[in-house]
Length: 255
Image (cartoon, rainbow, N blue to C red; front, top):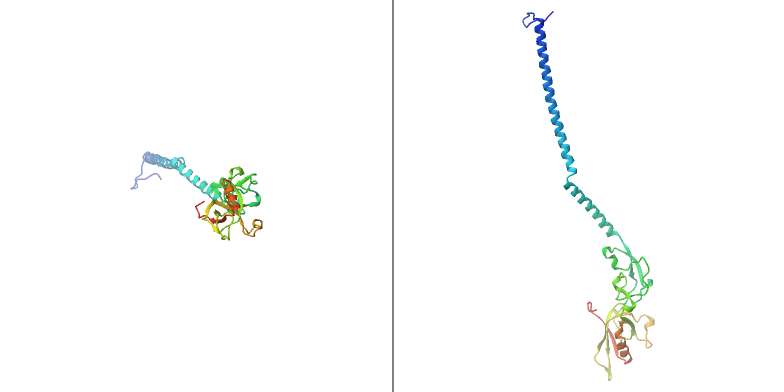
């Protein structure tokens, strides 16, 4: 049966075909228009996504980002270097006994210890080799103290020598090797002695009388002192003239 109108009236075939073509054109146009609109939207979305990708890629090449990255790396390396250097030890020589001016330096008077010296490492005698031959101590180095290079020198540069003296009476327990003392002398005066005077200032005790080699023939206690070479004649003259000798420790800071 052919097409009919809404009220059951038959319609011509040409009319029906025209209507179908019209609907087809309209629906086709809608598809085309819709397709164009969808394409525009997709293009816009692609453009937006692409824009974000470009913006994100710009962050990686931003100079500020690179500077920040370099600062982080530098701080990490700095902490690593600080920890490494602070925990590193260096073998150096230390005095195994008190060393007084003029003492020749050798292994028998030294011990090796590991110390954290850091930037001052170059100021001390390293234990990588034997002490240099002919080197002597130019100032007192206490037992256990690291050996500083500025306390060493040639024997010819040290203006001190050692003398054995016999102080009157007993002296205090604070007179030990390395102690800096003043040597006093009182000349004989009738049945007594005159006013004492300082014979040598800032002499250094090398050895004390407990050493049997320092006991005098009369059984009195003797001291071995490091004194300036210029004072040797004065000390020997006072000893020969039977002056009364005494030693007095100097106060800290008077050396």
